[in-house]
Amino acid sequence: MRRLRIFLVEDEESLRISLTDDLLDAGHDVRQFSDATSALESFATRPPDVIITDIRMPGLSGFELLREVRRIDPNVIVIVMTAHGSIESAVETMKLGAYDYLTKPFESDELLLLMQRIQELVRLRASSRYWDERCRHRFGLNTFVGRSDTTHHLLQQIQTVADSASTVLIHGETGTGKELVANIIHFNSPRRSAPYITLSPAVLSREMFESELFGHDKGAFTGAVKEKRGRFELADGGTLYLDDVDDIPLDLQVKLLRVLEQRELERVGGSETIRVDVRLIASTKVDLRSKVDKGLFREDLFYRLNVFPIHLAPLRERIEDVRPLMDYWLGQFSHGRSFTVKSDVYDILEKYHWRGNVRELKNLMERLSLTARDGVIDSSLLPVEILSAPSAMESNVSIGLEKLLADTEKRAILSVLEKCEGNKAQTARLLGIPASTLRTKMEKYGL
Image 1 (cartoon, rainbow, N blue to C red):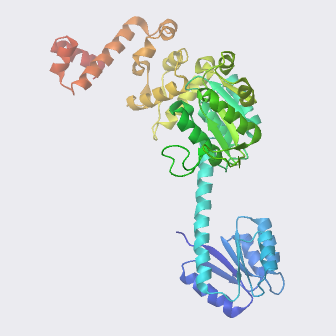
Image 2: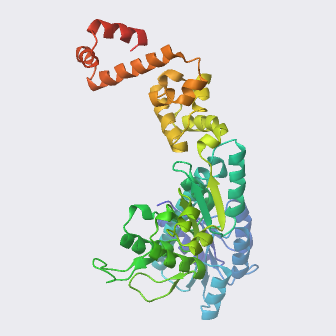
Image 3: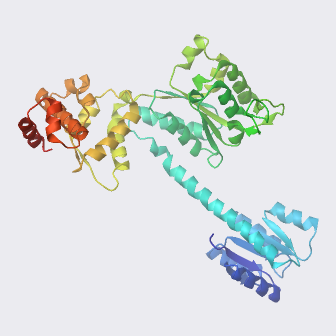
């Protein structure tokens, strides 16, 4: 655990020296001051982690020092010492933002134990800042890549709703980036430092989902040996993301609606009312309005979820985004390498249907980054299912039937060679061709 940078402000010289020695022996970096004014001057140059200050001193008092430090940098931890310990002075220092106070005389062990607690607090703060910064980078607005008008409109919607506490309903096909959008909204909202909790009813039984969402009390059902906080409680003050919200059983939709409207819940098997402050983001890959019409989803819950709807268009409807997405994912998988993408590859992929949407494109870019050994990505590296798709074949006559068949033949040979672990005789037998023909084709394709 790293040492603390400490300012010790005490006008009594003997006590100041004694405390400084104790803190130095404990491995901390300590600067001592006989008055608050000189401490503030040094504070402006390099703020410490902790200030330990007396209350009653000539010139600026410890109270005034505390006020000024809190104004300049509220993250600095301030400990106050006073020989005039009283409830009133303790309350006053805590109101002003002091972390703790010590009443003189006190043992050095008491101070050192307090420093150990502060070390842990500083470590947790640093870790929190690291993860907050990492999440900001990972889920910044620029992480939803695209240059189409559809994507620009989507980013405007995200910016609009992120600053609010409104419920958001995200609709889009599988692989369009619903979870990414939910993350971007949370980590660009005022709740970014609060919990972000996720849950999907699609992978849980009705009973398990109810327990996970609302929690349960001890003895609520067989196996409930202790109480459990639900996802709503865990997300208190932050955001709860419910994926596949259309899979929530009808009887539990009533309970969900109550939480959204009244901001309170009861755990399974419990009677205590628990207040929660949670921003809900839900997503679905189906038409919820249609499910409402069929009686498969509550209409009142639909309207409560649909406060701010966001539709994610499939990749085939925002084809201008294919090229920037390709470049982005190749960059993510490059590991320092550079790639050259032939123009016909862009042409083919911009006309492909992309049933798996961005997820399918991402997986293809990872595959191409591995197979493009020389850093050049041409159409011969594309999967047969893409090359043989009607859109690719019809709109890219330059490929030609001969080249398409050659690519297919090359892939077939490679596949069987791998299965036979490089045994050419066995490969030729499985392919039903003479060994000499196999050698000729391998030379032709540079295998």
